[in-house]
Image (cartoon, rainbow, N blue to C red):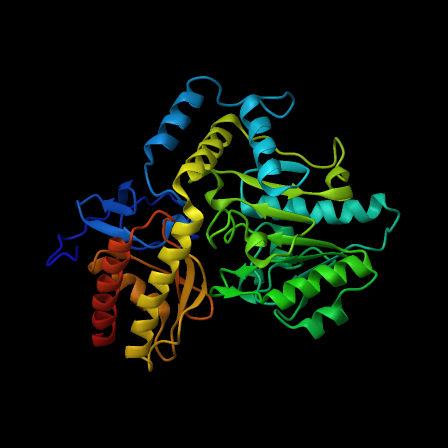
Length: 405
């Protein structure tokens, strides 16, 4: 429940960490379920989940046990040989998705880099050497490595890193006519997030994704979904494409796949699944035994929790709480948007979303601001109804304190 008073926050700083993050003045030392704890013993209801990563919450005992057992058996052996955790995980993802092949890496950016290379190599192997343009949506975020950054439509992220790789273009999001005009004979793929996360939680329309599928089929391009943030049950179904009823040629996963351990995946079907041959792409650590074991355990836990229905119910409750706040404070907030437990509460100017984040710490709630001046809510998928109501109380207190200045 909402705490009446909170202790002072000690903050242990680490001066040798490179200053490329704007970190909050807080030092988290442990987590449990949907809660985080700082070095002073203060608790925080976590509505960020490591940026949509800890789907099963913090310190899940089954995940911890799977990691410990695998670490005591085999930590790393490289992709020069087969090993059971990665092979079994690939089989399971293929079975659950109905796709044909899986490439493992270490992050969402790397999964999207692999998708970019796959699209170009697929066209090249088909004799279409000029089909090399990666088309992405305006407002997109696909990662910070150079290829994924070129696919990302955010000038602030590009600044100081030009020249970026060539062969990338962007088209208006949720604009079918613009997409029709953009997909052509040089388009290798259309890479799109079913829900744009970093842009402020903006879902694609079903019509838009259906049009993308039709146009890619008609014009020989691949359709690739970036499900790094919106996949793995965050919208309800395990894969985001299932929510929309549109099946891409490939999709990328990362973030919550191993519930906090670094892993990414490119999942491919059809002819494109055999486009990458030995020597075309690789990674030293991708699909290593420990994160693969954690991901396998994550999928096993999902089988007994019925998370799809829980996300539907919990997401509706959280959305209703956010909608009530937006209605009461309609000069400060717009109505929430999003799907499942991936929701955004847009903040009206001159108010600034990140200002609420700092005040949230004083009221025991961990918040996150995303692009377009939006508070983003991506809590652990296991969050309970009581915790959602508690979060709403804490959010109201946070808002009041922020507005007081």
